Amino acid sequence: MDSRQIQETIAMIREENLDIRTITMGISLLDCIRGDIKATADAVYAKITTKARNLVPVAEQIETEFGLPIVNKRVAVTPVALLAGGDAEFDFVQIALAMDRAAADCGIDLIGGYSALVQNDMTAADLALMRSMPAAFAATERVCGSVNIGSTKSGMNMDAVREMGTIIKEVADPTPQNAMKLVVFCNAVEDNPFMAGAFWGVSEGDCAINTGVSGPGVVQRALAAIPDAPFEEVCETIKKTAFKVSRMGQLVGKIAAERLHVPFNIVDLSLAPTPATGDSVAQILETMGMSHVGSYGTTAALALLNDAVKKGGVMAAERVGGLSGAFIPVSEDANMIDAVAKGHIGLEKLEAMTAVCSVGLDMVAIPGATPASTISGMIADEAALGMINNKTTAVRVIPVPGKDVGEEVEFGGLFGRAPIMKVNDGDSSQFIARGGHIPAPIHSFKN
Image (cartoon, rainbow, N blue to C red; front, side, top):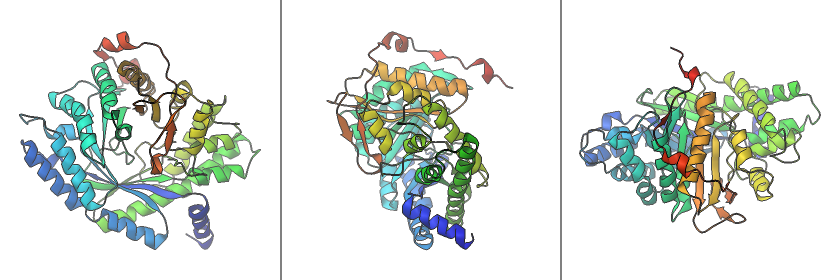
């Protein structure tokens, strides 16, 4: 970097909320399988604490040296449902407790991978893990999990969709914050560094470092300087800004991997907002010319943003992966919170927006009385968008017991607060009760 670029970076950190949102170590636990759940849990604890013991000190050292904030230090592990297929009993909560204890002992913020991949069908172990989630998340502080219920190649497992509607309700009752730890995917990726959906896929290596960058404020400030520019200039400005932001992720990831003596894997290019003023993806869309997010044109603006971020970021990193798009979590974006509170945006518009960005209905609070079948219907709709369009989509909705539209729930910190959103009062129960499998789309057959 020359002196001008260094000054630009310092300004972005101080004034525009530039940070490395996460440095996530992926750890394979396949060699921890013992055929006995207690022995497996002990091996899981030992491996995580061995591999990740220096993750936080190294990240803090890099922060001090470069003056670049690294907000979260995380670990993602092999989907836990794969670790006990040969066991006589599936007491997965023991593994969740081992993961939580390991994360605490290493000083890690969150650990992901309490997960099952059931897009085609469910084993007994998969189903046991899914049904253990309410107990596992209630008993732990740092453990996050996910379930992949569909894919473009496999279609959609509607039995799993039905199960997850009920499980989400159980996870959120009586503590809605626990539902923040659970996401339901279609087309989940194996190298995602962002929670709650991070896991370390079976095609990955033994251990590696991924980084997730974030700079909504940087992009918004750049666009504010060209208020009347044509779209070609808007796209070029976003691309150039995304390049700078992604370069930071590449630099930090490479240094961290070298010091931890593990490979560097990918940079996730996703723009991830926070509740802080000036760190909002929704504000970027408003800066393009919307009176508020949710106005007609919002989906087009988001599509432009998502594509330009990817084009700029791909040039900046050796390898990109994860989700690599623009996140629109309601509770974690100040301008999105404001738009929902004022009635400018509802679930239907959010669903439309997720067709062109990452990842889905994210951090959405809904009335606690919402039926499980309605939640399953939300999952099915989002999964259909992902399955047909060959993209990752997800649902992280939070039914808040005892609360209804017009109230809000406070999550705190980076998770922010969420107004309770109105849910369509239609009845999906007969549709969801059919069960079975929605076949893969015709364009999935590419062999």
